[in-house]
Amino acid sequence: MSGTVDGGVVIETERLLLRRMTHDDAPAMFALQSNPRVNRFIGGDPPPWEEWLEAFCARWPAYYQQHGFGLWATVRKSDGAVMGRIGLLAQEIDGVTEVEVAYSLDEPYWGAGYATEAAVATRDWAFARLDVPHVVSIIAPDNRGSIGVARKNGLSLWKDTVFRGTPVHIFRITRDEWEEIQTMNPDR
Image (cartoon, rainbow, N blue to C red; front, side):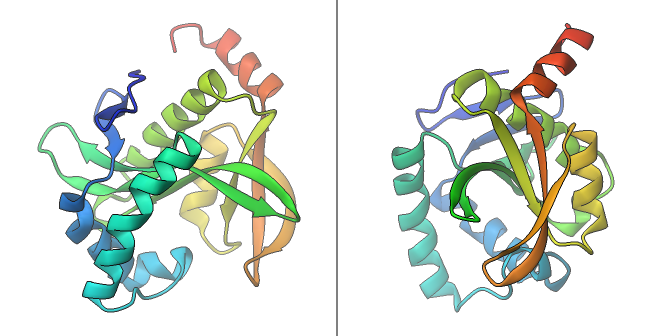
């Protein structure tokens, strides 16, 4: 697993590269957010392209600077396809700032284990580099795919709440639970 966050690759797995998003990733991210089967879980339709592009180009460099992490472009190593975005977000949940392992891949990449592979690596990166007692994933109750990824990532249902006006499940793994997984799988 790589540790550079200076504009290059942040995490490398067997099949994937997770790296900071750049202006060149904007078309793939806009397509992701424009897909109705994806955007129903990530905030709905994007604004018009020009407005969206300006916000995209301003948001991610500032977010990485502020937090030291963010959502990363998820790239398939075999062909360089930008499949979506997976990474960490600082989210306010019930008045507390939590670190979320967030993932969203475009539909052609569903069902091949890419989201789980990247989410596991992201979870490991968070615990190895951040002083957090746990990480969470915020998931719509009817998003069975994301619930499956969370469970494969070692997270279990912690609580139900309302996030940005929408009922959600909050899945969580504690540092102690993560350390136990690491002990059981020392090759990671």
